[in-house]
Image (cartoon, rainbow, N blue to C red; front, side):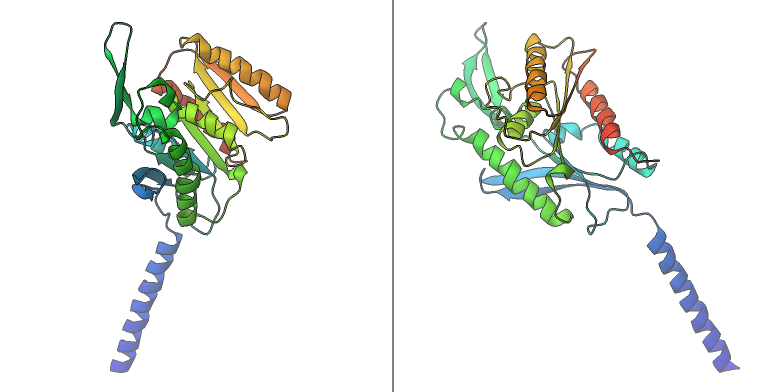
Amino acid sequence: MKKISTFLIVVFVLTIAVSCKSKVLVADIAPQYFTDSIYSTSLSEYRKHNVYLPLNFNKRKKYPIIYTTDGSAISSDGLIKKALDSLIGNKIIKPVVLIESFSKHKIADSSGTFGDGKKVYLQYRNFEYINNYQNVAPNPLLENRFKNHMTYFKDELISSVEGKLTEKIKRKDRYFYGYSNGAGFGLSLLNTHPDLIGTYLCFSTFGGDVQTNNWNKDVHYPTLYLKFGKNEPTFLKEDADFLKAKYDDLNAFIDIEEFDGGHDWKKWNKGFIETVLKLFAEKK
């Protein structure tokens, strides 16, 4: 009798253990959001980036990856993370990974002045995203900052992220999102390294040498979603018209929207979410 009781207890314990294990296996793995960093040899410093991993992330699967500039600013209100959680959790869009590369806001130069004589304080961000060096006093720390940051982004950040998080993905599965100077950097990356990323979202683009870059008829340029505000400087519309004509001539895809407003992060976040809905909509 004692042996039977012991046997029943063991069976009961094993049943509970198996049951609990089964529940763990079928339970959803919550989205993850954390800050990581890598040492950049091209910039000779550590650089931070935020990582968003979707619901039920599995390293053995391939996911579209969205790389962004101004990561610390994008993450400040948490809106994009919340939107992705909801859209992916409700199976409105396919799961995506988001990488938010931090910009460097430390002051790098104050040699310039406004028309009223006040100093212009430029951050490292202004030299990493836009090739501004020719407009300031000579400074060996800034001379190659744009080129070195480009190398960091395309060679170090992307390879590090993809080496850790996912199986090898193709150009079509990489996306870029940037606004203002961050979008200018995106258009420079698009033009000079068109084989790296398949789709760009560039909003209120300041910089990028849009009309002075070389555009080669033999190159398959990435898909481009371009947005700017009606109340922004007129050169944004001029750049958009130029890109529309150039993309049509190159038989490449471009989507341009002039939104009602100005240089506004709320408009950019709204535009990002709307475009993500287009790009990653789940088929019903």
